[in-house]
Length: 170
Image: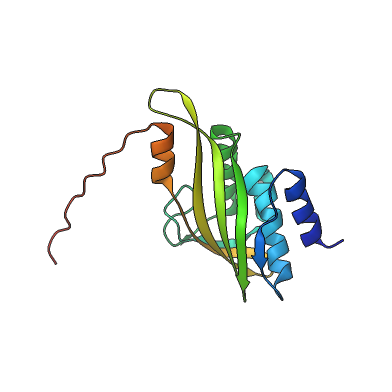
């Protein structure tokens, strides 16, 4: 049994539908992504972050797992996954579509969990995200992604000021 077959079997056993995949010829990166999805995104075994992120990992995200376009130490990712498990222990990431091309793996996912709203009541949320991972030597070296945080804010009852501040003239 290949690592990919084992990873997909574990997702199915956890009650997740099998994602649609288009990764012919890129099975190694797909298998690593599937395992990373299980270990970090869902089980949040933070101490295993070094198995998936290269020391030269660059995150192009502005969320808690990124810093714009700077190298992010594996220790930072470990801390982020620990905080994620503490703050949203029921969170699950479901892979819907995974497409591979060369050294890239692109994943469209649904994220479900519970967050505490402004009234300190925990509410369920469900949102979608897209991520692009670049692999080198079996590890993620870059990530670009987005998550629909506005939907999480709305579903959990948090309030946010969406008024726009005009940009200064150039």
